[in-house]
Image (tube, rainbow, N blue to C red; front, side, top):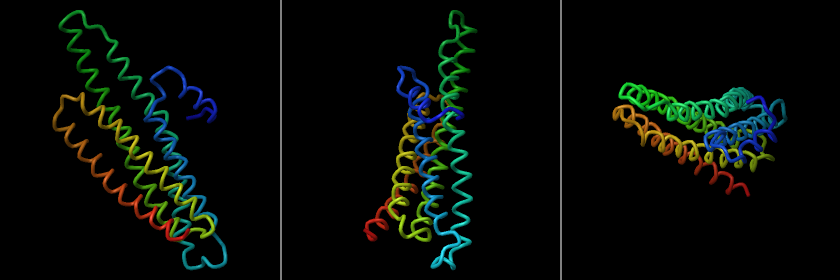
Length: 205
């Protein structure tokens, strides 16, 4: 993603399938990781946080890496869906063309499923660092850590929708079941983290 936020939002609002929900999910993840990094960064070198300097520095580094990867996933998700669209537009006049088209569709759907699956994985990682930021980062910014948790949870759920809709069209039952199982597990783990973050924020209000 090299365009400005305004340019991306303009394209998102257009009557075009890309960018879509998967890219929007990744953008939520990028914002969430940036917020978690900010909360941790505010505690770096500050009085009262001497015992957690290594921890908050680790959060800052992880947050930066996650933000960069989410930014890449914004584009990767759009690219993957465009490949699916191209596969569906392939010729299907002969048996050979239909077979080639079917294979291309299945391949592109698998690739389009793996992108939101990774987005889910990164969302769970972001929830982990948001929790660390809440517990060890700047106490004055605890609501920002809470916002990071909420945005990471939105990223997780939105990406899960994309995984589910793509695997529903896959013929490879083993891949379909394995991928859906991974996605369901990620959502369960991420939801538990999001609940803990929300509870932690409420106790501080």
